[in-house]
Image (cartoon, rainbow, N blue to C red):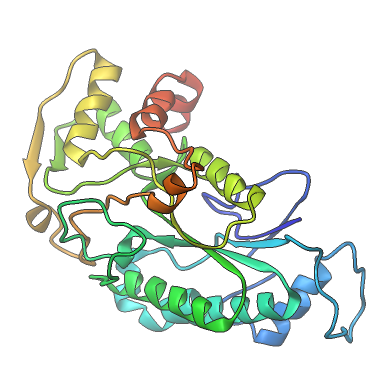
Length: 298
């Protein structure tokens, strides 16, 4: 059985007949106490069907996962709302981990490529040193450490640059091309855009194999915002449009610092023969080839 906390970009697609979704109205990681979170998770267990006060010695069925797809994700906002970001992404996640330990549930936590500094010229593996360059990345790094110290069973999934037909970087770039206005892009930032549909399939593969530990889960290969704009314009207009290029430090003059290299190596999944994430182009091109999806981005 799966419990999914969050109904946003990723949480909305991690659903099957055995899934129960918990929204922010039901569990608020920033404000809810440990006891309230535990009681709310008990309430959602249809097998127990318990009324308070709850016993302390009853666990969920074996191989139950709580997928934490919620959190404070405003990277720029985290710089000025540090207390809210920390209470949600770090303290709130620690409370989840403690509850999972008490209930015998495995916590599958979605983390980020922003836990790295982006200085390396090669993809980051699960074993590289964490060194975030912004406060959002710091809160996610600390959440990972708190999970590991909680004693719960866990699977930490580091992903990044998620999108679907309407949300994320790719639809934004598609809209820029459709508007037929001058195009501006960063040429020195490397990333692996990942469709949430593909990530959700990888998550189910991890759960099916009852994996625990830390896993990178991003699409294969990498690109830059400039090359993405060229690829999108070629597919929409039949030719590459001119893109005015800039380095990241000149293009992003405000907000949180971003790492230059956001590319991850799915080393652990590859070692187990369980990496099913495709090349990044597959997801982007599938979006461009579907008129119904293109219309949603307009």
